[in-house]
Length: 331
Image 1 (cartoon, rainbow, N blue to C red):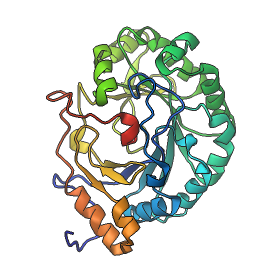
Image 2 (image 1 turned 120 degrees about the horizontal axis):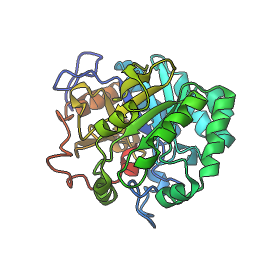
Image 3 (image 1 turned 90 degrees about the vertical axis):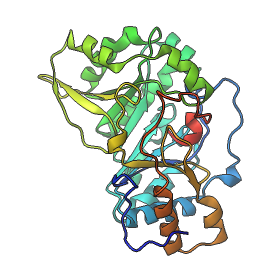
């Protein structure tokens, strides 16, 4: 173990790590074709999932090292039983100023109230289409369940609600302006995401890759776009529709990578820290936690893990190198 003397997290390239994406399950009740293959059942065994007390210890350690933001992800995080209990515990950690959730919203109508009471401040919802038949083809699920979840979240007062749309040529590129209109109507934030070569499914999805510069140009033909900003620790670059509150984010890991400002790591449900979405650098915390390491040793382990963070991904140069699925990494 590398000895450390300061309570900060800075990687070898001078980037301060202030953001943890926390996966609470690798299971999901949808099967988006670019994320998880049909029939996939090779999930992490529940006994290998970090328990709530272990998650709380790790996030507390990150907090003491300067982390301010935690986003709860999956798989689909609402598959994890008693998630509001975990949220409440994390919300009590001093130093965590932003506790958010990424979800597909299929179960959100049932849990929105409890999540807000527990301390979730804002949510991101994956929604690639507004057409029920197309939604079925992309995800294998039912659009009405997602819409019910989104509208329940709106009614209970979540704000902002960010709609994440993976933009795909030949699949949903005919719905760009429809999604803009939908978010304008409901006062949602809209974010477009480029497909990434994560595992075989992601690699195949890059056949439908769409450069978001083209999406932005298409929107600009119908709406006046001005520079925009949005609170948060993520990589989106924002524009705003003039005369409205609508902010549109563009997440461009392929066409315009944001590695130089990367401030995040991912903690998978099995306790593996992934330093980069597009590299295999990782550090396993679960064995150390279950051996009974002290809190100081845990912080030292995290600090050492951050020294493994690479300078950048290689999605363009080596698109086939990442063999794990997005759901196993923690979206």
